[in-house]
Image 1 (cartoon, one colour):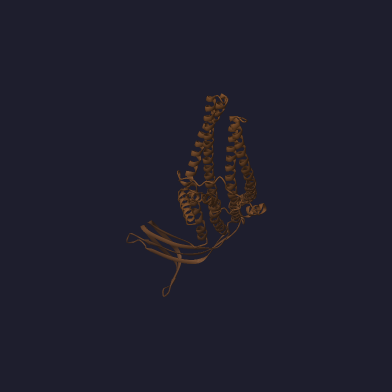
Image 2 (cartoon, rainbow, N blue to C red):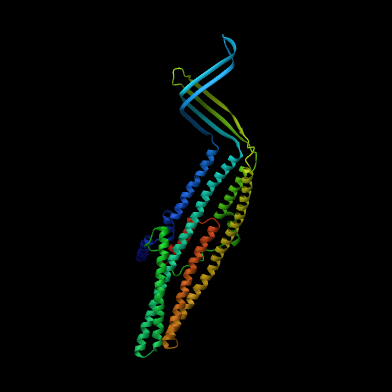
Length: 464
């Protein structure tokens, strides 16, 4: 019992060490979030979009401006036939006044504060800016989903390329052995030269396939490295015997309903439609008034430079309402209104199109999972049948009932079936994630569920 426990502990420690070196799917995604330049663009765009909320708040706040000016001025004011009166001095008519300043110094300043009380266009702009801030967050979530799918696609492409290369090498080893046997039998006079030629031809063809598979592996691994900045780490593979039946698609109608309501791309388009609708509000009323509360204070001081020049000081402060009514804009307001109506209609149709596409994507992914599960079962059975056929063909070859070509063809059939099985497994897992993306709930937790197929099954395999 103690020896068994020690063995189990040793297996676990060995597995943990190997897993520490393996670069699994979840780690690839986490690396891509910090390394992928396209997602860096998305993060920066989202950060810029968040400022739209601050801009909306600013439009609802008072606007304060200050002006100041300094310059040289020459001033000559004349008043004739003025009425004049002063306490204790009586009244006078026909009085003349004159103030004159040559090359004087003029200093002026003004502080003005405006608070919007009613402005339909400004209110529509506030609504638009708030929705643009929401749009930035939803767009970032959509970009995260797309990055996750790109990582999974690149990861599975690399796994399939490694499986393909390994399969080709295994087949080459089998053909090389058959070629060696055929040469030996021909030398001893037990077989015709045709068996040697058939084996050699098959080996040469596989050599070309190995070069192609190796080249493809380098390309897809480079694509994964571009996303994750990890070129050399070993990847976590699906074991040859793995049960993917736990990843079921579920009810189709439920998925379609979620796609109609929760798809991220649809949410983005709905927000864009709402923004287009708010644009109508800016121009809907041709003569919409603008009412502001205005407070301002200012002053001016004119200092003459000569001994006979006048000095002038003026201060003022005011608080009141300012009403602005556009009476004629040359048709611009109406043209903008018509444009906004057309753009909203365009956005509405785009929303319908995106909703339809979301439903199609969900249906396609659901079928990819459901049909793929059936294909996996069929291919697993086909693999077992191909193994039995190969054993029978080899036995027949030993007793002279089958040729070397029959053995080579049986081996080719087995390896092709295995590759089809590997490819279908990856397609089912990717379709499962695409289904979640269509429904708007693809996240790291969902990715980790798929990642467990690469990790948990390795643990089961090691313990067994």
